[in-house]
Image 1 (cartoon, rainbow over the protein chains, first blue to last red):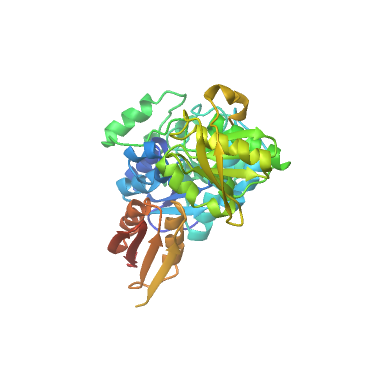
Image 2 (image 1 turned 90 degrees about the vertical axis):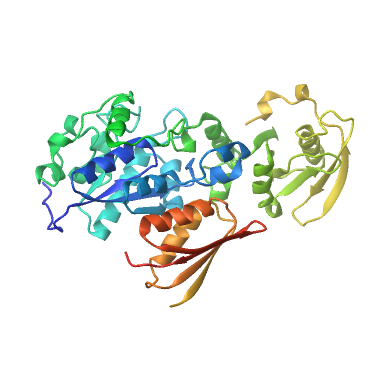
Length: 353
Length: 76
């Protein structure tokens, strides 16, 4: 049994804040019980949050905010955002508990984040960890049988409190020590969102993020397909931050095994890809308005011609007999090509990643 | 009081905020940090982070896609 440490008159909890409703409620429940709460948020590189706002034009109508910071502000708590990009690679590449329906290592991910929170808690003299988990909410990481796995493998053990479903679980250290009142915790379970929405109403919380498909790109089938393609092409499971950022942007077409084309879909993506043009052979139409395209891989003469025709296909010259395309190589040398754009029917669906 | 510059141009949110957070953690009260950035998300995220942590935003400017936000470290 873990012994309760001496702590300040007010118990201190670090709450994992994703920016969604459940973690917001969990922290709010703790504040309601007089606990000092500070939030922690981990940036893995796969987060749907953040820079994705800055890239796509269609996202510009949404609030340009970091939801975790916004939640912290609403709750009146501090938020510590931690860069875990490097450490997280091992979670994605070698998940002990495997992947979900896509390349989402949810159980390993939860264990990793709670472990990082536990390390932060120990370094900063906090007493316990709070998460917004609900039994049965997620098929992999939030099940009755996997919740103890997270507590054990993270090293948090009974210092991990899930206020939204705590009454369905054995009492934790904060409950046994009387730092929090178990009777004022909850017994939510299952995939229904109704209890959370009712609790939010009770607290007067009317605005919260509802990210479709979660807050991680790894749960997205198309994104996972592109990541799998990256690993397959490289012959090993390895990535850098730049790789996984580029997977979020543009149309990805692999017409040949040795190269793929990343084609911007709007002005926002064009501007984003411009930042990478010195590290990739890149193309854009000069006779018509059109997107910037990057070549990822080793493209030969015929491949460049094919890439130019594809680039022309996705610009204003798609129906023209001929489009002029500028191709700039890694040395900065630009050559001009006059090409016939592909028709839609000429592009096999198998080229799209 | 010392004025510092944090160059986070071409980094995407939330990395500019993380870099600012790590910089401010090492500075005494009263020092200032001029954040130089290109991601427009900074215009929202840096002031939000300052409000959450009690630091003061002294100025915000945006010229030709380059954003500058000056933050003064406050006691917490």
